[in-house]
Amino acid sequence: MKPIIAPSILSADFGNLARDIEMINRSEAEWVHIDIMDGVFVPNISFGFPVLKYVAKLSRKPLDVHLMIVSPEKFIPEVKALGAHTMNVHYEACPHLHRVIQQIREAGMQPAVTINPATPVDVLKDIIRDVYMVLLMSVNPGFGGQKFIEHSLEKVRELKALIERTGSQALIEVDGGVNLETGARLVEAGADALVAGNAIFADPEPEKMIRMLHGL
Ligand code: DX5
Ligand code: ZN
Image (cartoon, rainbow, N blue to C red; front, side, top):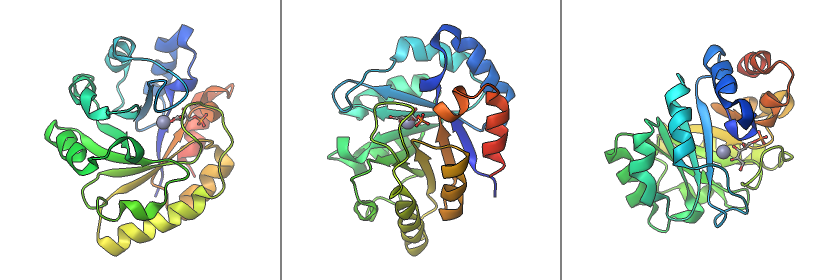
């Protein structure tokens, strides 16, 4: 089965954001991946809701919103107002994760839980049946263009086994350092969706790169 491709606009040309979103609209990508950072949970700040309002208006692809912020539940109404399809919150940022997942679902979005590279897959055992998707970070969150952490492949396999063992329907998405080479191995290991920033936007032919990733 072809992987879902979610280009990350963190690596887009912000001077030509409308052009880059139009490229994604034309492409075979299923989703647009949106990285929101607060400078507290991660050591970087990306963009906020005033900018994203325009991204949402221009995008014809469902929005896969990844919040790298503390207390993400505070922004459920804002993410909902964007018309987001999926809201990804970090396990490490939510002491009351079960409640946050229910709140996201009640707001009418698909809830997803994200784990950092040093967080073991096992901690998801009691939430895996409640989430639409797990987003596995294959780099430490905060920046685009980082090197893929090899151990992530083992985590994809562990997560796949957990999903099968528990009868969960959760999708597996992987984010960080994804390119044609790491992407092929991730799909083989069981990934359903791939986020890619640098691999797409640093390529002279980004639409073709999306097509190639989609063909993995
Ligand atoms: C990293 C972000 C990623 C990032 C991926 O904190 O969550 O979505 O944009 O970028 P690449 O594909 O360049 O590693
Ligand atoms: Zn992301």
